[in-house]
Length: 185
Image 1: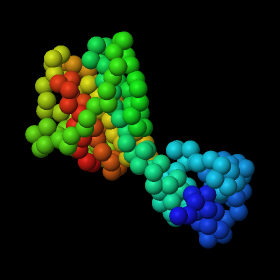
Image 2 (image 1 turned 180 degrees about the vertical axis):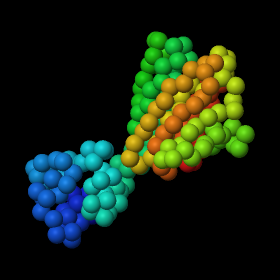
Image 3 (image 1 turned 120 degrees about the vertical axis):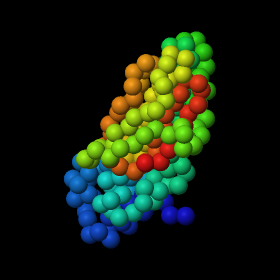
């Protein structure tokens, strides 16, 4: 199996770029690129999409399949006492209000549970037909794709009206009845 650093080096050379040129294109030092190529570190998460596009190789090639799988496993946590929300890349031991929180289990939203999506110029307007009561409301909405995670906190008795930049990904929403749903955008 090819080392990740070697994949970066090979792709850089195939593009005819020096370490310094690649470094300038992604706003890091040439020493950082050298470190990646010698397998002494990995690119920052925020750098991966751009590096992938510039080199014309997959993110898996840059960081390895196992690391990518862990990054895709975003976990969400909700405190039933104070209603705080947290997320992590992979499961963590996390507590709030003296109580250990367990990662929420996601399930695909059925048609009647889905949030409503409307294209508005370069954004998606997200609304809900679910009544927002203190006993059962959507506590947060999160959008995740390969480049970013956006989390929007929502509150009981407020109508859901959220806008996010138009792009593909998964939209998660947590109802305080204990269900974490997702749907694709």
